[in-house]
Image (cartoon, rainbow, N blue to C red):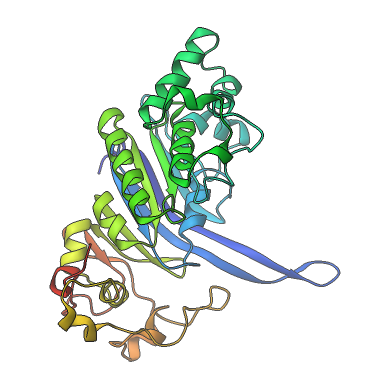
Length: 343
């Protein structure tokens, strides 16, 4: 893939948080939250980042935003007509210059909105701070944003507490779109909402993508939403990518046992297949002291001796379909379609 086709590229990105103890705060260990992540996002594309709690997916989102500086690796970002910048090593002034082009929508819309500001003030703030528009043009842009996310002009004078959870998330999306970004990092934007409202937010995001060509990094643990929303999917386990593929091949034929286990626990439309659920033994690996070899091997039903000693590489098994499993070619894993997943 040429550099001009890539909006965002992560290359061997790591984030290790130090654990300090004692009077002198000596570093005694590290939490390996992200441990060598590689993937790309093209302009106008949606990439889903999936994994259970603690796998490091939100940390990846915060590093892309420049909130965390990676321990190692590169995060190359190239908005339209701009020079490619490495967010991982950029100076604060460079990150501020990139801020209009990459924005974030957080999980809890109530916590991410200032309760003392009206909706008009919330939407105006990024435009005023970045000196994008002023005067009549500012008011026009605010009205445009409100209409884009399906709210009414009459709502502008209200405070966040006067809205439902779904409406607050629409406001968060409108604020994120205020500066005409090229990439939107959505960190579990629907997990705090009812199922019916989740569908509204996802449909809104798809509509906005069609209208303005926005790219998304959609972080979630919900396989159903990710399948509906994403073109490509990155699956993480304890800081590492275990599978990376286009959405349909991944759901039809997973190439990693962890992916198969997640899919087997999705609600099914075929009651006779309920007994085929894979119940993973034990707990997720400790990111402070991960096991030798494959981090998933203590819970894997297909593990062999090599799995406990050799770390599997993320390899391309089929065109565009990568897996970090020693036996990805030989395992015949069951996908969502065969399991009758209700997604």
